[in-house]
Length: 228
Image (cartoon, rainbow, N blue to C red; front, top):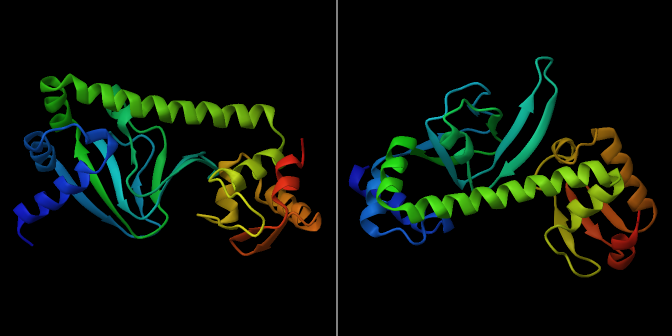
């Protein structure tokens, strides 16, 4: 495929991101020149903890898991990154190696924006740095909310909060877990067994119905108040 066409497609995708919404066409063209496309098969590592960070990634399609992995192989999921979301900006600005591992949970297409290219554009347009800072602040706020939930909420409260986070608003609402129950459990700082027991308890109470990764809300108002 012609490289100029590739660059135009990358530029159009970058232009849709909130991060680059006020960036000029000429600036986007230069950023696109410093951007590479990565096709990652499901289960493949994007990077490991300790690898050097020389840019940040954007998900075009697919899903990427960010996780801490212990020397013994135990895993704690930090975040799941989906389409039109980015990851790695904070570490890139710090000039430090990655502190988490990233793995594709689906066949994925990623863009990798080179640090040198981005820093060159920031030097000419400080507003771009402000936009990236706003994005990093939103992510930090989300992680702090997660920490509050881990420390102050019961496992049942965390599970219900996760089920309701995207705003299902009526009885009969269908929810599709975006990842395996084991990964959801890790995301909520629960063991898989504990998470399964919570779902079973909620089902026994007539609040939800579970079939694989599909969850149907049976009693929204009761579910919201359960465990409080």
